[in-house]
Image (cartoon, rainbow, N blue to C red; front, side, top):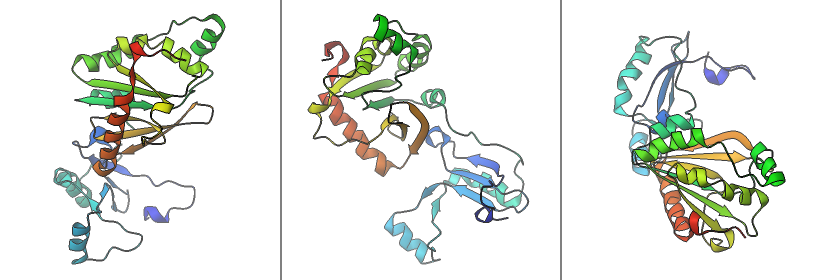
Length: 260
């Protein structure tokens, strides 16, 4: 059965064949096979270059419900396996990359933008701080994880855009940021009124080696929705790199910023 012809509400089973090992965090391209039919499903970057599309048009038309997909040469062996049915059946792909996996694969830099004034207001440590003023926080695992990356030379910059006067959550976050600093992060704070004229994405993000953008989305009350969107297209990443650097230049180093 064609995956497009699946009954509503059902999901076709696919056998994973291979993924581009040179892709950031192995997000794509990837090749899969529909069991029973041998149909091949490919995930990859859409071809959008006008010259490339013109060249393709000399050989075949691209229908409204079709797209041209770029497949790197190093996936040729996996593509041949899929086409000849010599792939391993029942094999599963790597799935969604974890933060730990993304960080482990990072060579040069991590850039993180936070632009909300409140995140999880139910965090027990935050709730306790509001009552007692206690700034203790369990940073052990974060310091070990990020500290290992910064220790091997990865530059980790975190920029927090905040409204002033700051929210209780930001005041608490500033008070416990000693853990970020101990992990080797470069941390800056940027009052919103100092960057109103600079463009930046509408969602928080992590930028890995300037090759992969991972946007994360929060609910209206600041809680994490668990939804992530990944971007690997250099044309969409390059502007964000420049935006972050302009924002970073205006940011105030953590040791010099006092919440007001």
